[in-house]
Length: 331
Image 1 (cartoon, helix red, strand yellow):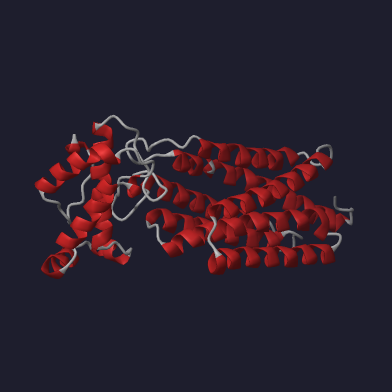
Image 2 (cartoon, helix red, strand yellow):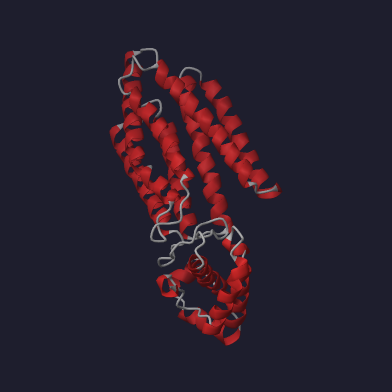
């Protein structure tokens, strides 16, 4: 049974330790989180004490691939990785559901990628965003009223997908925070984008005020989570709240312009898809083949949305450019 699970090749545990851990698992499997299990904690302690000091540590560092060292994988991390699979094997042998470790499902590590499917999906989202940003720049003249605002939105989105890729490659204190903060920045900038489109073209002062308030909100949000307390529940509630504002504002604009703009449906469909696909997160199942989980499926499903959204942005920017030339009132 143990041979079915991935094992770290650079750090090994003696067979006697595995036998002891198996005996200990009888009382340990009642915990809901794998990293809280005594079997897991004792395994990590013993592995670190045996393999991560003195000559064995030097041997580990000398044999570790460069890409692992560059991404910050340590001897202790390898111990945690191997002990995670040892604990998973014991859970399955006893017929229990696979546990999570440190708030995440167990994933096979491929090269240096901690969550390979989510990392690949984030990278593909970033590439789709980059491709459509370049298409937008090549199709829409710089004179279009929304050109610079949309270009800035593209850069904010690219930055978010970059940090999402980094975070799913290597989960650390810094990469986790950057992933969360950059995702919040995208939602807030989408609100600003909507504000400029609906109000700012006719009343620039209004969009400037809203932009300043959004910057203040983002600064306060990041400051609280960084210097006071990183509260996952608060972070989720904050993002859901601003996400609802973003959704409702865009929907109101779509409804208002459904009879005058033939491409309005693209924006409405994008908003529906983004919020509907987010429900995939609720599935929350153990990874298929220890690679593909609900979070990865969600990220994969959002890749085509970039093409539809930028198709809307291109159509709308060209419309605005033409109406400006004709001196027509913008709605």
